[in-house]
Image 1 (spheres, protein in one colour):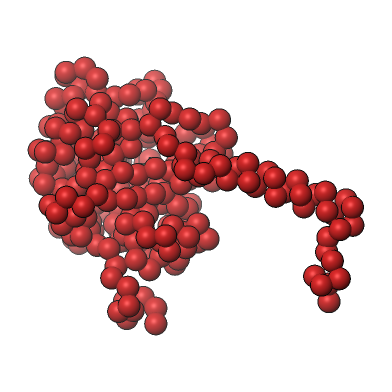
Image 2 (cartoon, protein in one colour; image 1 turned 90 degrees about the horizontal axis):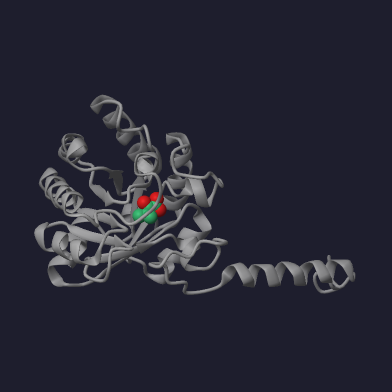
Length: 273
Ligand code: KIV
C-alpha cells in the first residue's frame, strides 16, 4: 500500500522533530534531489531529507544557489517525495520566491506544497521574514528557518566564511532565532556559526536546531549527501566528514567498463539475447 494508507511505516513529522529535541534524540538529515538517491537515504533510515537549493550547485553546476527556480525545485522535490516513505521531506524555497511580497511567498509556498508532496518548507532569514513564516504556519505549512551562513545572501556576505563570530552579529542571530521560534518554525538550520553560539541558540528556542558546521550541541545535523559520500570534487570544508569516496568508486567502475568495451569483453554471451 502506498501513501497515507500505508500503516507499516511511521512517517516522521515536523512535530516528531520537536519531540526528538525534547527527548534528547539527535535528528539526522541529508539533502537529496532525485528519486534514486532519496530511495537509498530513506531506506537507510535518515530522519529528514532536504531538497536543498544546493541542487543549483550539486545538480546544475551553478556557482551559487541564486539561479535555481521554483519550477526546478518542484521537479527535484517531486522526485524525492515520490521515493520517500519514512523521512520528513523538506523543500527549500529558492531565492526570489518569498522575498518580493507576502502574497508571492504564500502563492509559491502553496504551489510547492501542492505540486510536490513534500512535508515542509525551508526559508533563509530572520526577523525580516518572521511575518511570512507565521502566516505559512497559520495556514498549515510547517517551516524550517535557516540562519548563519545563508547562501542566498552570498553577495551580501562576500563569500562563504563562518558567520556571527563577532558579538553584534551573534546577538542578532540569537534574536532572529527567537523570532523564528515565536513565528512557529519547528526547526532552524544553523550553518557555519561558532559551536558556542549554536549551543546558546539550541538552549533558547523550543524548536529543533539542525547544524551544518555549527558544532555538536545542535539537536540534529545535516550534510549535503554528495559531499559526505565523496561525490563532490574539490570541496572539503573543515566541518565536512566524508563517509565514503564514491567519486573514486565511480571512476574505477567507469574505467573498468571502458576497458571491457575496448577489449570486446562486454557484453558476454550470458549478457546477450
Ligand atoms: O541547500 C542546502 O543544501 C542547505 C543545507 C546546506 C542546509 O540549505
